[in-house]
Image 1 (cartoon, rainbow, N blue to C red):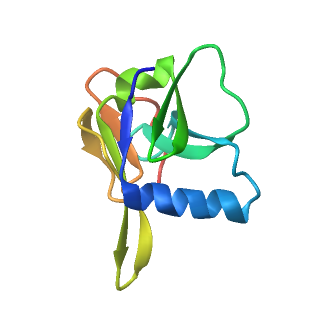
Image 2 (tube, one colour; image 1 turned 135 degrees about the horizontal axis):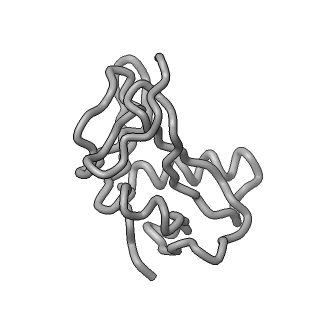
Length: 120
């Protein structure tokens, strides 16, 4: 069991609420990277009923998390948090491997993987 990303207690609380509201209490949280966005790569988070053979599986504050081995190198050391402000709340992602990001905050690239940029 290799922990690839860190998820704060605040983020886990909000994810558990989303899982409960969607009837997905037994699911895993899948954290992923996809091609696209202004800088070439974008983050993805969603629920998955089962792990795949090439997944890293770990747990944070009772939340079961999956990251594919392919995405693990890009996401290693990433911290996912949930922040509340006067304008509302949302998830934030701090990736130490990102060397550039877009103004929208969801697109990035790393020194080893640039992806295919799209217009925002």
